[in-house]
Every structure is written in structure tokens, then in C-alpha cells.
Amino acid sequence: MTFAPVQPVFRWWCLWLFLLGLTACTRTSAPEAYVVTGLPATRGEAQPPCLHAQLPGRQRVLLSPPAGGWSGAPQAVVVMNAFRGEVKIRHGARERCGVLQDARTLDSRFLSGMGTVLVPDKGNQRPIEVEFEPSPMPLWRPLVRLGEPASVQRQDTLRFALRVASVAVMLALVVSALLTFMSTRERAFLSYALGASLFALWMALLSGLWAYPRPWFALGELSLRLVGALPAVLSALTVRMLAYHAAPRALAGRVRRGADWLALCGLGLAAMIVLVPEHWLAVASLGSELGFYLLCLAMAGMALVTMWRGEPGGATALTCVAPFLGVGLMEVAMPERLASWKVEAMLLSGCWLALTASMALTLRLGSLRRQRDEMRVLAQTDALTGLPNRRAALEQLSAISVSARRSGQPAAVGFLDIDHFKDINDVHGHEVGDQVLRAFARILRSTFRGADYVARMGGEEFLVVLPGASPEQAKARIESLSPLLATIGHTLRLPELRVTLSAGVTGVEADDVEIGPLLQRADAAMYAAKRAGRERVVLSGQPQG
Image (cartoon, rainbow, N blue to C red; front, top):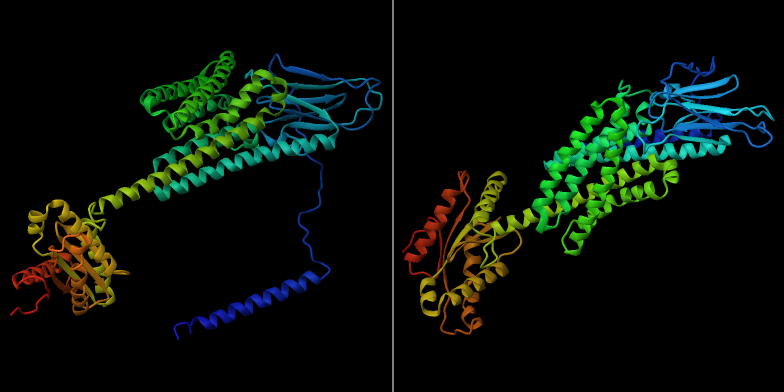
């Protein structure tokens, strides 16, 4: 009967879904089962005019034809990694110009750089001319690619896909870190989100994606300086993170102080790259990149020391910097081969670093949560008996009391005290007293199960809370403990040892807003049992003869 109002709505939903499916099937079988969008083109692609006003000292590359002249086949030419200024590709009267910082000026057939397709006449001996501004960053050389259009376009598409995927992964990690921070309030994830955001910005600037479909910001020449400055900031953040995560314990203080100092140096270097005159930009950029490779090498050495000592964090740190070490090694051993794919290599290495750092942070958060849970359990557990302690018992009693008053269901509370426990300690010693307490706790755990709650309040006093039970039912349950308590002496091989209890029982009442009066009633009933001769259970308010 509870679901009767829902049934008509469910029927209407089923009818709607049936009609929708029937309509879809009908339309699919019709001849016009496709969609056409857009409008016919009325004009060709607007080609930006060349500026013809370039800085002095422009690079000019001549792509010579093969022996016997050009074959007459189309020739694709693409210029990549020209981080500033206009790129010009010319052959005879045909020329194409574009700026990598604005995708609207580029040939849409090429996504990773400024490119075009030329068709020199068969036998023509005139070379294809390519001009671009020289790179102010010595280790980031422009790349000119010549070849058959389909092959060049396929490689260009692969490059663009790698660049888009790298930036997309980084942005996804930023969003994930922010969501984790909002749910956990762990500041480490906020710091990670900031670092990953800067990494994503650098990736977008380095790959040219920030210019799609048009420049996100009017940065102008600042975009080039940010390409050189952001790695210094990222190096500082990365070194500090890895140093705090993976430093050997014996050197942790020194390593972290050094990491803080290097982080400040990195921020200063980044500011210098943004502000220094043009002729100092090459030196600052070179120092920033070489310094990053050296720091990665130092981090790898520190990680190996940490792993050798058997301490945590070393493997993660080594995994983070390994791709960058590979890029640095190729910069020394195979610079020409690296230059062809350096942008993609750095982007993928950055993604790898961000992913492993995110994994490390997540594992660290899990470890912290486990430690907090363990500390909470230890803080709320009695060390001798393993039962919840007084603090945990009061919290649980308060929750059960509120639930019972709201639901109107009964709940009973029993206050238990071992009789003559001081005499047990005096006669048999405190070690036997501890054994009695542990045996008493085991009996309570085996007798009260499910929703019942048992705790040690201190000394020889214990608390039993029985949700759903009346005081009379609780009294009977507690009285059933007597035969079990009689076995403790035999278990401890002390036949003369006799263990009994006195208990007071009360029920949760409608006006028990606080648990104080509830405990006072149970405690008063327990002392009434003591005064009545012990070894008995007394209900609160029960007259004593």
C-alpha cells in the first residue's frame, strides 16, 4: 500500500519510454535517417596577409628540391616550436604567413604548427623559403618538417592529439584535486591543484593550445617569457613536494630546509625571466632548464638513498622524476632526435609526474585516515579489556538515547559493578584482578551481541546498553550472567575465587534530554543493589525490602 501513489507515475514513464522507442524505430527505418547541418560556403578561407615587418636576424631556411628539380607533387611544410613572431613559408609568388600564438592565422590542415601545402612546378629548381624568429631559448629549437601532405598531416595530427590529451589529463587532475580538497579539507590537495593548474598553463603555452580557437588571453610577448618562467616555478614546487615526501628520516630536516630555499630561488628565477631584458632571456632560460635536470638528478639520488634505507616515499619520488631524467639524458646524448619530439616528451613527462604525485597524495590521505581511525579507536578503547572506554560509552549512550526517544522504542541501561573487587586485588594480587576484569569483559561480549553495547566505565564498573529492550528484559539478561561468572575462578585455576556482580537497571524516558539523569538512575539502582546485600540486579525506582 505504501507504493500505491508511485504506480500511476511508473505506468506513465513506461508508456512514454515505449512511445519514444517506437518513434526512434520508425525514424530509423525511414529514408531520411541522417542529419545534415551547416550552410553552403560562399567564400574561400581568409588567408592573413604577411606583415613584412619582422625583427632583424630572422632565421631563413631554404628547403632545396631533389636532384632534377621538384617532381610536381604537392609538398607539405610545417614549422613548429616557433614561440614568437610570424612564420612565413614562400615559394615563388605563393606565400603563407601565420602566428603560432593565434590559431586564426594558421592553415586548418595543420594543428601543431604553422604549415601549408605548396605545389612547385615539375622540374622547378627554386627552393622553398621558410622564415621565422629565432628562439630566445637555446634548448627549444624550432622544427621544420617537409614531406608528402598525407604523411605530414598524420604526424601532425598525432602530435596534436598528444598535446590535447596531456592538457586534458592535467585539467582533469586539477578538478579531481579541488573536489578532494572540498571533501577532505586537506591543504596538500589545494597546493597540488595550484601546481597542476600552473603546469596546465605551461603545457597550453608550450603546445600552442592556448591559441585555440583564439588566444585565451592577450599575452603578446609575455607568453614567451611565461614558457621560460613557469618551469622555474614548477621546479620549485616539485622539488619541495618530493623533498617533503621522500627525504630520508635522518636528513629530513636539512633536506626540507634546502628544498624551501631552492623553492624561493626558483620563484626568484621565474620573476627574473619575466622581467630581465631580452638579451638575458637566453641565459635565464638555459639556467632554468639545466637547473631543473640537475634537481631531478638530485631528487633521484635522494630517492635511492631513501629506498636503500628501507623508508617509504623513495620509489614514488624516483618514479616521478624518471621521465625527466630520460629527457635530460637525450638532451645530452641525442639532441637532434629529441628536438623532433621534445614538446610532446615534456608534456607526457609532466602528465606522468602529476599522475604519480596525485597517486602519492591519495595514498598519503588514505594512510592519514587509517592513522586517524586507529588513534580514534585507541582513544575510545580500554587497553586492559578491549571494550570501549567511558568516553566512547557516553557518546554511544547519547546516540542510543536520542534514537529511542525519537522512535518511541524502549531502551535499557545497566550499570554493573564487580562485588568485593578490592578484596580480590588484596588477596590474590593485581595481576589476578586484571585477569578477572578481562574474563568479565569476555563474558559480557559473548552474552550481549548485535545492537547491544558494552563498555568499561572505569575500575570494576561496566555499562550495558540494550536498544529495544525494556528494563525488565535487561534485568533478566544481566541476571543470566551469574552462572558464567561462577566459572571464572576455575578458568583462572583459583577454585576459592568467587566472582559476583551488583547491577542497577533503568530505561530511557521521554524527558531524558541529557544522559546525566539516565546514568544517575542506573548508578543509584546499582548502589541500592550493593546496600541490599550485593549479588543482585535492581530496577530503578524498585522499592527495596
